[in-house]
Image 1 (spheres, rainbow, N blue to C red):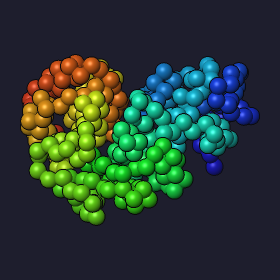
Image 2 (tube, one colour; image 1 turned 180 degrees about the vertical axis):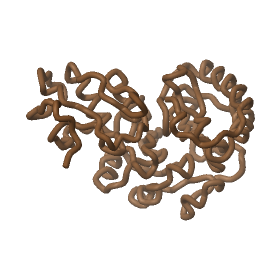
Image 3 (cartoon, one colour; image 1 turned 135 degrees about the vertical axis):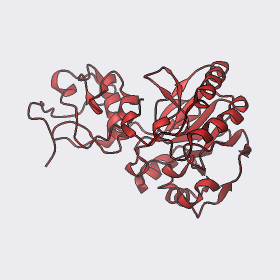
Image 4 (tube, rainbow, N blue to C red; image 1 turned 90 degrees about the horizontal axis):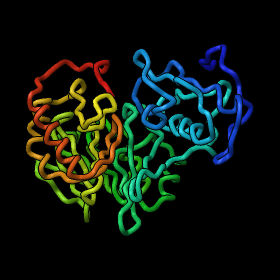
Amino acid sequence: MEDRPPSQPTADRDTAPGETGAGQEHGGWYVDSRCTNCDVARQLAPELIREVAGRSEIVRQPRDSAETGRLHAAAFACPTRSIRRPGRRLDPAFDPFPLALDDDVLLCGHNSPRTAGANSYLLRRPSGSLMMIDTPRWNSALAARYEASGPVTDVLLTHRDHAAHGRRYADRFGARLWIHEGDLEAAPDADHVLRGTDPLEIADGVTAHPLPGHTRGSVLYVADERYCFSGDSLYWSRTTADVEVAESVTWYSIEELGASLARTADRLRFEWLLPGHGDRKRLPAPEMTRRLRHLTARVRMLRPRPIDFTAMRY
């Protein structure tokens, strides 16, 4: 039986894209009890969905079709499918993914519970081909949807926690699967294995920067001095309005992460920070560099602490 609050009104249809609805057609949205507080929905509809008592909650109903569209994006991204309307199934006609974030980056949506709800991305190359960074949930219809944006030549895994669907997507696309040796046991059949800590250009304009810390095999992928796909190593925090590390869920070594940042930060140049968990942010490259230097100094002062998901502040 569907988990629903008894007082929620029921709408009889969805508002089509671009159509202005009124009254209860915009109402009735709620978050069900399966929510894992992963933050994905709050990134996509921050004015409508907030963290309340350790989980996401709808803080107000959408007022127009644009806000309804943002709630549909949140619903189709949510790994537990917890963004709901009473008695309603999600209509595929309102699925916005893959969603353009910039000229050359698409957000995949459809986050997977097997990657703890991590974001994944498609990076467009000058040839028209694509690279997938980490992966959404797997199904063949979604794979076809992503292929419609262009041929996918590579699937780049940022670390072990996001490896669950890598091989299936790579095989479907006929693509090469990449992972670092430090996390190889999560994808032992990878086609390309990154080694050591030196940066490596893996394609024209795309460089892998090994960054041990969150896990032993964590990697940043930087493209065109514009985009940084950071996995779980770095993210933009709405709480602090700054670049942060997930100190309370660093599985391998916070001290190693500090050393990795000290070795790597001055080599990095990018405008877009695009993490697996935590929010995205675009800033001028010199400002990103300044913030990374300050982050490096802060992280080098940190010491190991027990894993604590409840201490994570997005």
